[in-house]
Length: 131
Image 1 (tube, rainbow, N blue to C red):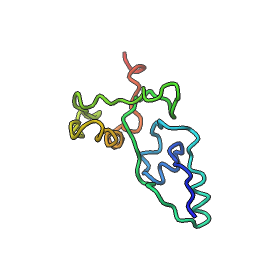
Image 2: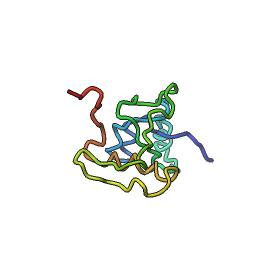
Image 3: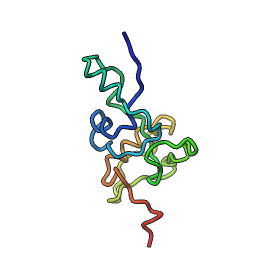
């Protein structure tokens, strides 16, 4: 028997478990209801879990975006202008080749790359930290 039950992107605990602790506080573009509770129940029954539990489709998003997806905003929080310049972290270090490939192929590696940088979990909201 095969049971499909969705993912766990809206669960801080499950993101940390399956993806790593740096994923615990990321902004989620998807629904707040996809929490992966059924995965835990199936695992408790000794069911074999399958799929791609240790991978994520993560793109750069605005640091001021909502904690979870907002249907009124849709993809407006995505920040996909990286091929037009360079990206540096808060230590002014360039950390990725922004032109590694076409945006359509490279944008999903940008989110995790940003997350691995100092301060990548939560960047300051520049709108409120200006003098």
